[in-house]
Image (cartoon, rainbow, N blue to C red; front, side):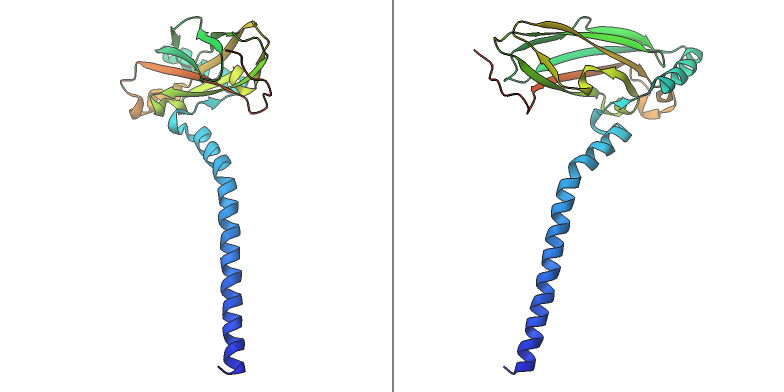
Length: 196
């Protein structure tokens, strides 16, 4: 092999190596961005039963429209905990009928049945999944971590409304009930272990 051919081959190999390295960096960046981008997508569209977060002004506007529509919706409340969270977690009322667009409050009670403090984070979704785009939470215990001391019992409110825009969505025709589900998981920041 001549010196010119060897230099040309080295340049091609270097070029290929640079492209492969840049491709690997791009894939690594996409890997890190995938979770926040998917979360953003779900929050904006309600995909997978992800609920929306609303401001007080949005709630007031929805209430004005909802009062004019005069329609109601049954809401069912569901609660569970992961196996490593020794809490009793339940809604105080299993179902409620609300006026679409009007703010309402659901209360969940939670008790730490262990002898150590435990910090939990609640994940949530709604069923049917396409209702997620219309279920708006103004305030929720699920927005922050919750720490319960040994034996402590607390009430956790959720202030929400169902967006009247659902009345114009053909996919929501015939939907008579929306289920709001929460599951508490142990926070990654929890250092203590529950006792048996």
